[in-house]
Length: 351
Image 1: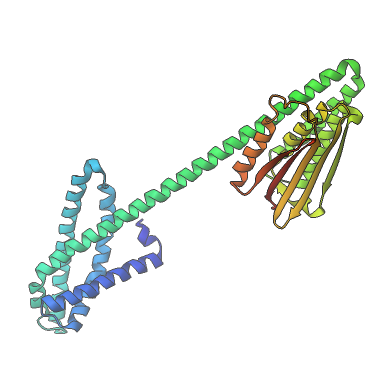
Image 2: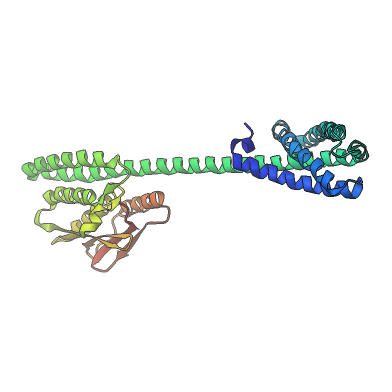
C-alpha cells in the first residue's frame, strides 16, 4: 500500500496541498484563458485533487526507476514519459469536465475556454507530475534513511549485548582462578577449611549463576552476593579479613547490574588485604542522593607494595559494563590514596 494512503491524516494533508495547487491553477486560468474567478475555481479545484490521486502513481514509478548515478538518464527518461502520459490523461479529464458544465449550461462556453487553455493544462500537468515524483523520491530517501538508522540501532544493540555477554563470561573464570588457588593452598595445611571453602564456593556459584542471567537485580541481592564472596575469602584469610556493609534501606530497592561488585571486592581482597601483614577491613557503603545511587568499595593497602600485574582487569570490566548498559548515565571513579584504595560507582537509582 502507498504510505500516504495508510493514514487518513496524511492523506488529508496531501490532498490539501493539491487543493492549494488547484488555487494556483485557477489564478493562471483567469489570467491566461479568460476564465471568470468562480468558473476557474469550480473547474480547477476538482481537477487538481483528481491529479493528486494520479500523482500517487509516481510512487511506483520512482520505485521502478530509482535515482542512481548509474541509471540517472534512464530514471529521467522514465519520469518524463510518465509525466507526459499523466498530463494527457489529465487533459482528457479536463475536457470531459468542461463538456459536462456546457451540457448542463452551468458555465456556458467553458468547453471553448478549456480548448484555449489546453497547452497551459498540458504543461502544468507535466510540471505537477514531476513535482509529485520529486516528492516521492524525497519520501523514499527519508524512508531509506530511517531504515538505515533502524538497522544501525539494531546492530549497536546487538553489539552491546554481545559485549555484555563477553564481559559477564569473564567474571567467573577470574574468580574461580583465585578461589581454586585458595583451596589448593588450604588442602595440605587446613583440609577442613578447604572443605568448607568448597561448600561455600559451590553455594556462591549457584546463586551468582541464577542472578547473573538477569539484566538487573536489586542492590540488596547484590550486597548479599558480595557478603557471600567475603565469607569465602574469610576462610582463607581468617582474622586478617573483616568486612563492613552499610546501605540505606531505600537504596536496597535500586537495581544494579548483577555481579557488578564482585570484581571490586576481589580487587579489594587480592590487591589490598592480601598484601598487608595484619590484613584489614573491606568496607562497602551505598547511599541514595536524589535519583542517583552511590556505591563505595574501600579497602586499606600497603603503600610500599607495587601494583600486581592484572590488578586493573576487574576495574576495566566494571567500567565497560557500566558504559554499555547505561550509555553515559553511570560512571566509576577510582580514588587511590597512600593508605587506602576507594572505588565509587555512580549510577541511576532505578526500581
